[in-house]
Length: 352
Figure 1 (cartoon, rainbow, N blue to C red):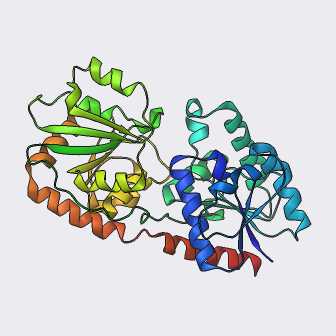
Figure 2: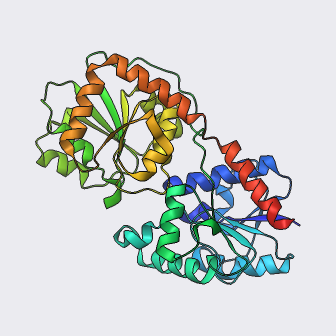
């Protein structure tokens, strides 16, 4: 009997959730011979290389996931279904689903109405039903999910993610007269993307400290920087970049700034650490869990504290070197192969 992976994520997921689903699909396909990625017709061109797949149904999105996919599963012996992107078929029982965090419940403004409805129904009517199994990505997220949905935390399995996705960059020297700090600029209140701007605004214009923003940028960031009086040359808006370009940015940076107010896990700081980049992280439970003593922390909404860390990292080569060593050591614990092995053991226990 095959183990099916819900391939809706190829069309409807983004950011870290998409990366998780792609990497787990790839590594489970390497780990096991019984994996098949089940995809809607529109996703054929998005299937990761080397992953066996089958095209099912005619629809896409929620209709495909809630109707076409369960119908195909039942016609093919009701195999275990793996859902890697927060939402699952509500009427299918034999499945294991990742619930990354409770963000749609605590930050509804960051998600579309349709997604919120699907998410709540999938969790309350699907994932919590007998016969289903819920997985999350950290102990912190497990505690939050259990508390929010009034579940027994022991019924939720926590499997950490991998961080070894980015390629090793071909290094080029960073400018000697500048300190480049990299951060993400995604929209959403919990991402706290303005933090680096607010900290930079507290430093002298001739400090030599500059910030590079990557990712799908919140359009409000550039006007915010202008309102703070920051000269355009002090902030570089790279926007969406390839994995190779992201690896290059991390490797040239004096530090990666991760100011989130809430996360279920947090891949970017670990991916930066994998390349030896020092990390400056907000002092929230999940960051303490996955980064331990390998990062420097600041209160997430304290611009002065972050500005002080900017100064410290810019002026202390020994601190950068120490944090770089700590980064590399910490990131060794987070690999996709290890995550896939734990998932494979979970599957074996279920199919028995």
